[in-house]
Amino acid sequence: MRKPDATMARRVTLGNAILFGGFALLSAALLLLHADALQWRDPGVARWLDAALVLAAWLGLLGWLCCRRLPEPSKPLPMADAAVGHDPVAVVADARVDAAQVEVGVRVVYASQTGFAAQLARQTLQSLQAAGVPAQLHGLDTLTLDELRHAGQVLFVASTTGDGEPPDMALAFSRLAMKRPAQLDGLRYGLLALGDGDYEDYCGFGRQLQRWLEASGAQALFDPVEVDSEDEASLRHWQHHLAMLSGVSDLPDWQAPKYQRWQLIERRLLNPGSVGEPCFHLELKPLQGSTNWQAGDLVEIGPCHAPDKVATWLSSRELDGRVPVAFGKERLPLAALLARCRLPEPGEVEGLDEDAVAATLQRLPHRAYSIASLPEDGAIHLLVRQMRGRGGYLGLGSGWLTAHAPLGTEVALRVRSNVNFHAPRDARPLILIGNGTGLAALRALLKARIAAGHRRNWLLFGERHAAHDFLYRDEIERWVADGRIERADFAWSRDQAERIHVPQRLREAADELQRWVDAGAAVYVCGSLDGLAPGVDAALRDVLGDARLEQLRGQGGYRRDVY
Ligand SMILES: Cc1cc2nc3c(=O)[nH]c(=O)nc-3n(C[C@H](O)[C@H](O)[C@H](O)COP(=O)(O)OP(=O)(O)OC[C@H]3O[C@@H](n4cnc5c(N)ncnc54)[C@H](O)[C@@H]3O)c2cc1C
Ligand SMILES: Cc1cc2nc3c(=O)[nH]c(=O)nc-3n(C[C@H](O)[C@H](O)[C@H](O)COP(=O)(O)O)c2cc1C
Image (cartoon, rainbow, N blue to C red; front, side):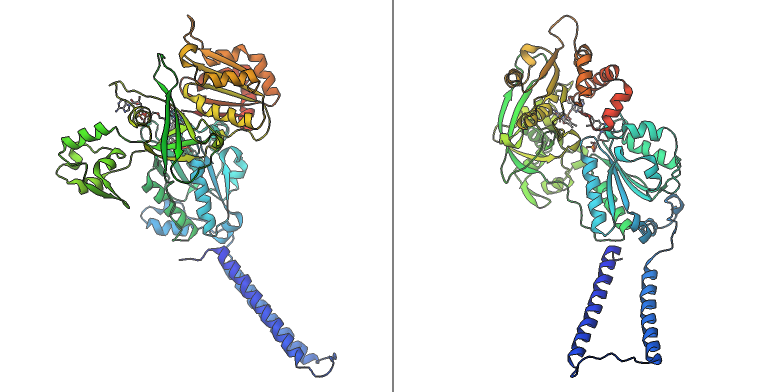
């Protein structure tokens, strides 16, 4: 294992300090041996010469030792492409961060919509720093093309949103910088592309970025790593590259964020009589410890199958769900384990007993929900719409939370920080735009603003019928009456003959919108990706103009959390 350069430097400094300390002590001891008062006498030319020679030799030795640790100034690192036919591990090892690179540092650049890429970028940074490699973290929205050109080594962590689109924070970079190939000959890069195999354009933005980097002459340090959902094997692959890159093979493993044990303590239907799917207010309390979060953050829930679905699966395979089986460090009845795992297809487990079935199981992927409360509320509140497929069956996560899980059920939950949607730190006016369950995050933001004494809040919310779909009606009307929400506009799409949606309300209030933005307002949008986001974006462009909106986005004043 190669020692990290920073550790070496610390050791050399310590060694020199000990040496000089020793000399100082020796001189002090020799002085004590003097019986008479000290007198100065010229030692003579020959002794002066001897002393000068010893000093010169010592300085020469020090200089040689220092130079030996410096690399050749511009040693090129090999391209991954040129490595075809070589041992991949050896090739990456050649690409280790050398001392020249250490001076510059590695830049870890992320493009994230809901926080996962940002989280993995932070973990990447920590791994590099733990290996003694200086590294800096940047959002793709803060990096210029010129900085990239001179960056040396860059590790990109990029997610995809929409239909194969870049995260909002990468929109400007993708539209301007990536419009055509740039001159990036000196750049060496690695890429971690996050996506979800259920989407048609898998890792769409990561792949666009990769093609652009390639066309711009940048050199890949290794093949891009693509991560489907939170696939652990791909994440380990990325960590392996980090180890090779930093020259430290025993970097601590990344711990997948662990679920905590929470309890479902309340469930209330908020839209009785609605023509839409039922929407529930849920409350959850931690069963152990306490958890902190901020308005704008999300939870990830480990969903479970309905008990009767598991029972049917077990009986059709003649397996006993009560048999205790091993799963990682746990031991639990097979039925309980199956509830939180993908149910294998018949052919996958034919002839296997309970233990062998358990060994094939994979945990269900999480479902994300916006937090609708603040820690001061004493519980996590969620606003969950029951999803139903064409066959009439309930969606996995929403079905479990809103229908299958009895009150008191233990819920596997973890909080995911969503920095992109945190409230502005200052008192600037805030325009909150949403539809449906998008109100969850807006409610938490409003609570945070109200708690901080900021009253310049403008809510624009859309649903179907005011009589049935006015979620959190009492609370919102109270806030409006108290002046804690300065202005509220609602688009009840089906309360009149023609359909009215939120973008229309925005256009109707164009002058006011312009005044709020001129006064420094930030615009936060939360709700449906297809039904709300494009219409609101178009209305904002019409009212404010493309350039103003892009400027606002660039300054962090236009943020979206749409799904
Ligand atoms: C950042 C973020 C924040 C979110 N916040 C919220 C929130 O605050 N509130 C909220 O309610 N939701 C929120 N969501 C959405 C939520 O994460 C889930 O996507 C939603 O609850 C549906 O998940 P599900 O497991 O219930 O449905 P799934 O089981 O994933 O199914 C989704 C849909 O497809 C249908 N379907 C599933 N399998 C099939 C199949 N084989 N054939 C045909 N159709 C099928 C289902 O019936 C359902 O209609 C958020 C999502 C994100 C990304
Ligand atoms: C609204 C939405 C749209 C998405 N679209 C795509 C897509 O088109 N292609 C893809 O591979 N992944 C897609 N994903 C999956 C995300 O890229 C993936 O969950 C990623 O881990 C999110 O990282 P982030 O939190 O940093 O944005 C989408 C996710 C959401 C919530």
